[in-house]
Amino acid sequence: MIDINESVMQFLLAFLVVGPLLGAAAALLPAPPGLKGRSPEQAVLRHGVTVTGAVLVAAVVLALGFDHDQPSKMQATTDISWIPALDVRIHLGTDGISLPLLVLTALLTFLSALYSYFKPPAGPSPKAFVALLLVLESGTLATFAVLDLILFFLAFEMVLVPMYFLIARWGGEGRAEAAWRFILYTLLGSVVMLLGLLLIGISAGTFDMVALATDNGRSLTTSVQVIAVLAVGIGLAVKTPMWPLHSWLPDAHTAAPTVGSVLLAGVLLKMGTYGFVRVLLPAAPDGLRTFAPYLAAFAVVGIVYGSLACLALAQRGAKGDLKRLIAYSSVGHMGFVLLGIATMTPTGVNGALFANIAHGLITGLLFFLVGALKERTGSTDLDALAEQTGAALYGRAPRLGGLLAFGAVASLGLPGLAGFWGEMLALFGAFDPADGLSRPAFLTFMAIGAFGTLLTAAYLLVVVRRVCMGAVPQDAPHLTDVRGYEFAAWTPLVVLTVVAGLWPKALLGLTDPAVQQLLAGGTR
Image (tube, rainbow, N blue to C red; front, side):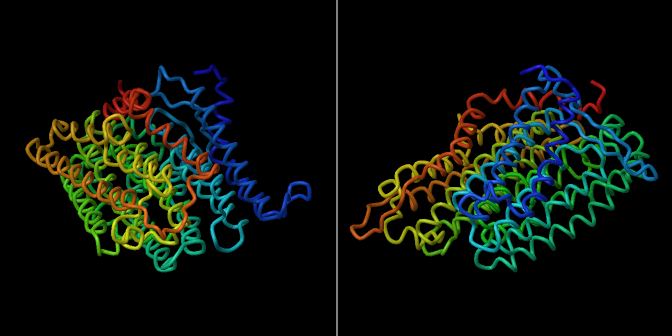
């Protein structure tokens, strides 16, 4: 930790939100003659790396300057009146809940830009691609940084357009239909969510999320809270995505370009679960308690459903697509996050926040690896890859095979890696849920969730066996192993997955005091 002036901290947080937008505008301008390099296309891709790199540096400095002794306190706050008639304010700030998500977003976007510089996605102008990537980053960072319900909604919506175009213009087969399904599902969810957010703000007399958390639902009747949680929860559940509102996700992931899949899984899905923790848990606790058993039930159905879908895709002869399989695995992993939130306990919510970060790191890495595999072999179809004995990645590209196996065992929750702690804490939270929740019901949910971890291990080990193992055929085409730029883009994710697994206090020390305060209504 380093001592940084509060005004500098405020500037850093504001730069995280505004910097990528300015970079997106600059990306659309003609490149100055001295910066063109070999071509204007190369110049704009380099511009993307530079801007996302600057944002990542700002995020890291913000994390270093963060007062780790008071993670429950909002820091680097900016509070400016924006629309006085509605009492809407430009209110920014970060605490132990949002800081890890800000850093994760900045890191994954930078790694995506770096990967795209060396391996530009096939499609229209790189100018538009870089501009959309930066607008997407700005919207995601704003979602985690704003403390006003109206601003939260605007930031939440801001990411839809760039992600739609990234899928529709730079995606693969079936991209148009996948992009339409993505935008329709999320827009319909958002309309309902806006009504719920307006209901909370108007009934409580403020849209300020800090004031709402401190009030802890005392100024909202139980019926208002129930209606608000239902409305806002539907919008957040679509983005998470919660079963049965998940059906847009597999198509979007399968059609999206590699970096689109990385950002969709790594950061966009986190916006939904973050909304549950930041908005509904503190502002409408009675309403959330009413729906908590249903939320937990949907969560565990999602865990088992996602795992069974992955098992079906992994079988020989199923024509299973690896990207689709990882997308379905996300439905299962986000089920653990929702289960942790539904327990309404510090243990469960901390587990949910930890699982959020772990999923972003591990699934981001897996999508990078599958993208590299597709580039080398021309396919992500498991049957086409494995043929009779297996794709034999260990023999043909040992580093790539080793990294894929690492990503798989991290995803199945191997102790000592990041995937383990979030799922375990979510299950612990279900073992002893908050007062007013049925313990027998949550014990049942815990048992089903634990069964889901076994199914997760089963399908991931099948994937490793089919893709990494097998004898190398005599006529097998040569496969290039991990290249230098790929090594640079993937190493941070591997290192952080190990560090978070071996030293969970690094994350839990940030989130726990903030979660305790949220659950106590800002009175601690």
